[in-house]
Image (cartoon, rainbow, N blue to C red; front, side, top):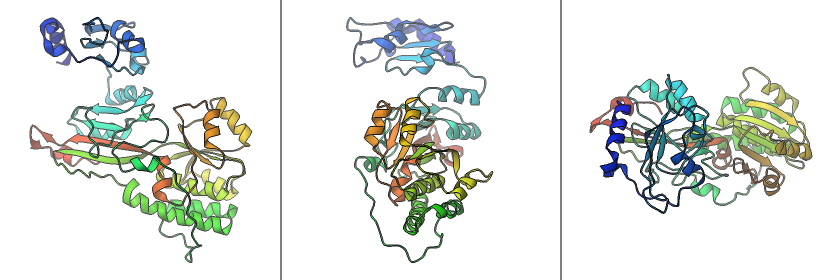
Length: 388
């Protein structure tokens, strides 16, 4: 039915004003001009785009079919009136195609089957997700805006979201007197296991600081990062803000504090992030042993003990396995220069604090989910009750 309706559009478009669009911001050139004028092997025009004026800024829309997985049109982000159609035999395959691009700003699905929507929500890689509605027109607060992968640069957070101001300045650690209660209470059992194993390599004040940080992490998790919230409460449309763990490399530079490294491993454990640890000094043996167990609470993929020089050489060689680095000690600006100012790499180089509201953020993606919760004005209980 979709193909039939588009083919009808193709037949009628020369005299149909609905096929014309407003001008693009500048004359089409480079990748956009190629997308508007050039087909790849196996592709054909369902609706052929046409240049409508001499400036190159006004085009009729184009739709191409036969776009192959991994092709230039599949992997390229076009800012113009051009659409490519791909096909998949299953929803899982379609999600794989959707996630195969280097970008992840917005994504959408149309389905009345809750299992399909749930699978898509759990596996799609994008910052703004839309169910049974358009995928443009994000509204501040209702759908905080910002993407994943190359649709996000640096340590920025979503515009219009609860963390937007958090990254517009810097944070300094505020030291407090040691606590009188040194029990590992007020935190998850998994985090407590990590602290017990790390204790052998920490001075007393470092241990107390890590313990305090874990308690504050748990509070931040319970109030913000571990919950999904719809602060708008529209009823006919669910606008849920939530967080998802993201892989992070933690680097302890020469001269950095083992206590700070342990504090960040605790934060990554609480967030459920996959961790890659690089340290200038050996980690406590009991902690390394814990990482190697089948039921390890920390998703540590690797622990490498190496000098700053060796660490930098591995970065230059392209061996970094994450898009985020949490640096302990060292110079974040110098590290940015070493990776050539790569916009794909976000470097968190601020002072390590005990504030869970600050230190959990590098280990989490923000995600806004917008779901149409009615069908032609009638409440849709399936989408209203869908767990998000």
